Image (cartoon, rainbow, N blue to C red):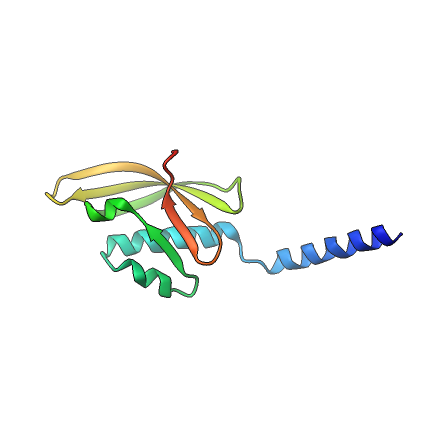
Length: 121
């Protein structure tokens, strides 16, 4: 009986906190969009850490390419802790040569949210 009561209490706590937790996919999408908009505007990365939901974004292509535009193509939310976003990037290198790339960004939904290009995709 005591076990049943404890199990029900834990279940109830889990259910009530899940209702109030922010949606991980939406937080992830907002973070990847903020990170890519920051790169596109050529703003300092530190500006992302000042957001209401801070974002940590490290992208090595920022040093060699400007981001002209991007389109989020696909979302993989099989793992709620790490959401993957497939993004089509239109880039321009330092010499002005345009290129198109498809990249997968992994977004670790924690505080701060971590956005990084997934090296395995």
